Length: 330
Image: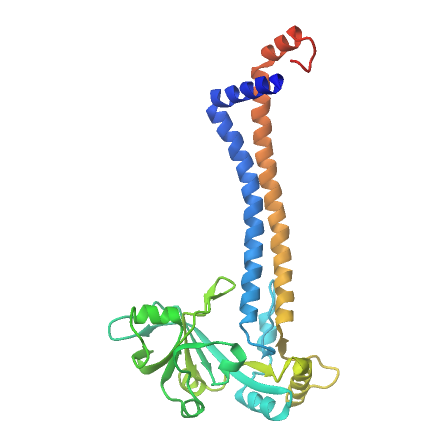
């Protein structure tokens, strides 16, 4: 016990006697450990965010799109040659697929600006065109006011449902329902505000969004443009059957032979999770490399400091070895 206390006293004396060297040693240890913890936290946080976003798609819901989902090098020019998905496809799915309870077209524009009489947003608002069934297929909830109805959609009425961040920007401390907002100079009436939804993978905020009836959206951005189709099965038992019905219908409508692959994409939570897992594996491998590099750099720094400490005390160590009864006592 006495030897332990002597060694502890000696170590503390060395530590306090060389504060800069001690600080550099601690920095080397902290950098290595902090890098490992940070990389693990980032990957886990990204995974939780993806699972949260996928859970917001709605129960028993899948998507049909023109474009693939994934990460890495994708030949977008190849997919641009595919036929567009149009409103007729949505109506055909509802009419011809008995396992489908709802199908919703979605078209989106990014980087738009909204204005009121006294305020305006930066050009960062996403404008979404859709139909009333969006409430079913997306799982969104209206916090204040209401969503637009079928009549407003068919007539292309200038009404708008906005996200909570957009409401706070344009109408701070006020209820925006009934107020006027201008999009590209055209007036729209705000009829509802959605509950807070957060961002997609920590990037694009779903709360900085304006949702229009599809026909009103098309008056701005054109009718003949490809849409994404969100589809909800009647229940969990018919989920796979609904996917099969939609795939078979779309292949017939697009004139594909049995030998030809699909010229559209079907995305489920599982397929999007698999795509994310591929990305997370790449990030994890890169993270391992960064962590190892940090630990090596920190270790080299600590080793140099230890060698310096031993070199400076060579004579003292020699005297202790010479005068002590045994090396252990030294």
